[in-house]
Amino acid sequence: MALASRMVPLGTPAPDFTLPDLDQRTHSRADFAAGPGLLVVFASNHCPYVKHLESALGAVVDSLPMPTVAICTNDATGYPDDAPIRLRDQAIRAGWTFPYLIDEAQEVGRAFQAACTPDFFLYDAALALAYRGAFDESTPGNGKPLTGNELRTAIETVLDGKPVPEPHRPSMGCSIKWRAD
Image 1: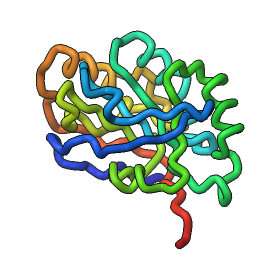
Image 2: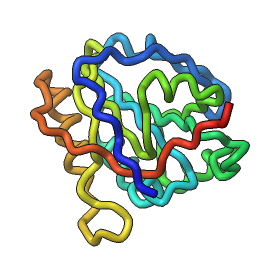
Image 3: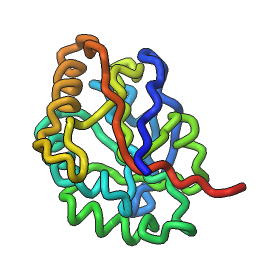
Image 4: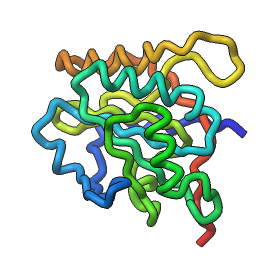
């Protein structure tokens, strides 16, 4: 069942995080404090919404100088396709050159208020939320072209030091797979 992203208030500071990537190197919010901003993408390997746009996401991110990280918050025990070895396969398949981080404790996903995959959080140079919304209008099976125009425009606007005009259309995707505690 598709779920929409939460529309976290603009200006919200980027939550602090320190997470390992697929090679066990750690990345943290502090790594991006010097600007020009940060794109955080909550992703997963098993979700058809992420699979639909993963290669286009890699192309958009590679074409713009915006630091980017993907984070998988999903419960890999319950969803083994989201285990690190499968995430590595995804990153290779999609041509992602940015770090793919593992949020095993699921604390970072909760701090960001991530709801679905994909879920996009774009922060400005001060690491304040500037955009939370869709990649574009395309979803699996809706027949609309995969362009990345909404996210690309938001990134270009942030790189120009300007606020991203609202309204921001929520991203749609698979729900985050939270562990039952």
